[in-house]
Length: 470
Image (cartoon, rainbow, N blue to C red; front, side, top):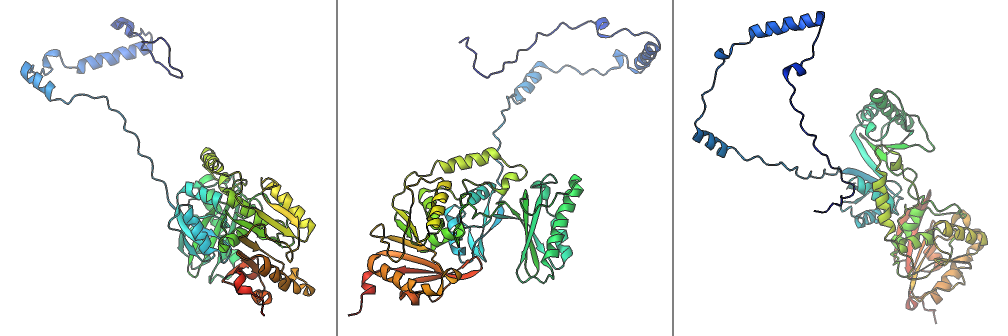
């Protein structure tokens, strides 16, 4: 046996048993009134105690029977504690809102992330997930606007029903008076007269419950709250959601420079999804502005999670496991590629827009050679590869002056002559765009860019389809 002691091991030695003290040593001697009282109690106890002759004495059992009892007694074993079965993860019902028109694409994205029951819904999709899944959905989703966890649902026919619904929800599980709160309310076909009053009733119910259980009410902060709650009303029901995202998920944390009419990042990712872009193929945007579409594309091609550089609302909730969250992010970073397979190129006539795009590129932790941003005219620039995708958000509406109507015909001519084999996807609020460009779209997707009703037109540039008339 080695004399070397194993590291970080604690050995407990038993102390030698002390000799039993005699009766005189056991009992301390007392004096005075306390001594007389103790002596009197002992004398009374001795009077009540039966004599040894009166005590019942059991007859000794025969030796054979004793041996049998010993043999029949189950052997004593050192009871080993069996490993504790892992607690079953709690499953939550989740709603992820997104821009109108991206519902199917969002459901497909969630299914690809492992949420097999994801189904499209009005302006979003629904699925079920445990808490780790909720963290992953926030981290990886490129199309969702928020990740909302349903915490209560019930019938609502009057404003007071909202108060009761909020009072019956265990908010103390998620946050308390030490955190600030914001409540938002939305509705579809709700008979309530004032959504602002409904919002107030939900807020009162939350605060009253926390005051009753913890003695204080949380402060309200509408700008940067620690906890966000969403109330959604229908004709006869109300649903309360805990917002786990905080700031909207389209805020990736890199865009500070904005162009004249910037796309939100999740809509830009949605355009790439609906266009069917293959990340191993070339991509071009001849109206790139501040570079939103192309930077989103570079992150997709490299496998950079959409939320890897931003904070989330769940990090400020009670019982947040920072170590578990760090492990999830470390695993995500380990799968990020370092090199793009194909060129990504952006052009714009505005030199200031190109400067903004290059600044955003740097803030997105991408190298300067990841995306090529150059000043150029869409009517004249050539494709960077024989085949690829062109996805763009050209000027339309107020951004396009009347004297620039010839832009469409000139640009279309460039596409027909030099982009054979390319897939072209254009988002525009001009529903006559295909007619202006004299191109027939393979498909059109209804979308909303902010308040603008738009279409994403998908074209396939094939030389044979656009031959000049003889």
